Length: 489
Image (cartoon, rainbow, N blue to C red; front, side, top):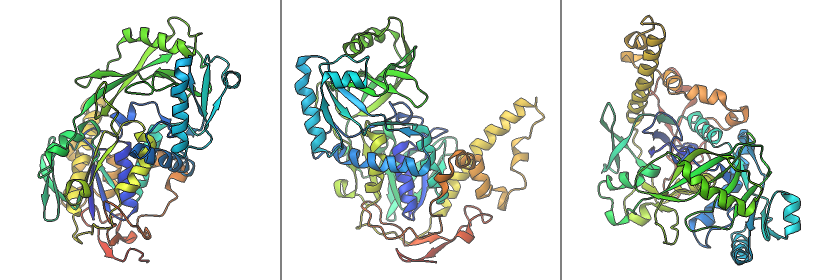
């Protein structure tokens, strides 16, 4: 079955990888020119333990499970990360009750190792800290999110999956038991797929409204919550993450660390009407006040604007926080399409767990028809974008003596189309894989049987790609072999 995943953020890449491992032909359509350019690249890069989320919520289910999966993935793929731990602190007596509520919820969520510690223990762990009580979470960590996304992309491309950049999906409509997608941009066209997953982040609601036959009443409103970060100009004084007790709309202005050893503070919560990625310097005044509640020694003039992110929330100020919305056929009644709304924090931590569930549904069966032409056209389109840009850059760098685009395209495969290897090179696939640690590529190859799966939203296709047909045949010339779910060579 050929699956279209809309959006190459961390959740979209995780779902695409899971679908490719399950034996599907996967195409990821990304409106931007690279992976993870939206919500996925503008966060704290924290591996959350799963402390706060209400019992029975999707966050409470996906976060602890996803955290365990993520640590295992990082270890096997060489993704930089560190289990540094975190302290959630009460800075006055009125916050102790809220701290105890977080502790009880963490226990209900099955988070390992959490404990309430007294002031002396907290000071021994972090001498610069000021608090009246604290909760220690040893399972919390930090991660290089971009390397994580590169590893997901590497697994996807190792199994024949493809990413088409500069390919915004503007409409979806049901057709012949599957879905047709309107690809916008400089070369508009309609392409056919067996199934589709909407992981468009801030654009998820817009695409859902542009999905023909999708119930409009099931599209939630989008509320933009901007989170600003300020960097610390001195040397880090904390070795763990420091969080205040939660505040409405977020987890409070907390201390975050990155793997390069830098310390920053944020995010706050700024409700906005439109996307805006400028950090207002004047917000530093509120940061100083909040940070000095737990670090009185914060020097004046030590905070500098860093970056901001926008969270796709489903509820606004003064309203209870909404859970993740994952709308599959059981919810909306349309076959082979899944829409994901409101995937914000802890979406990065939950990504592998969400992906595992989104690719499951024993009720769905592959149609048994090939749609390699759709993947081929999308990838040739993405390759042409990059080829033209690279040709222009060479032309400019050599003062007009560089290789021009018609010359660059000459001598390729049938009808002058790029081979699959050239498409991967032009789209950056080969370079991305080469940059990954060796462990990121030492998994079963595309032609090997994925084994038995019982999937919730997409049942694995009863076919797989033969290794010998990969390579020089090009994208459109690939063949498949019909096998059972547990078939062997």
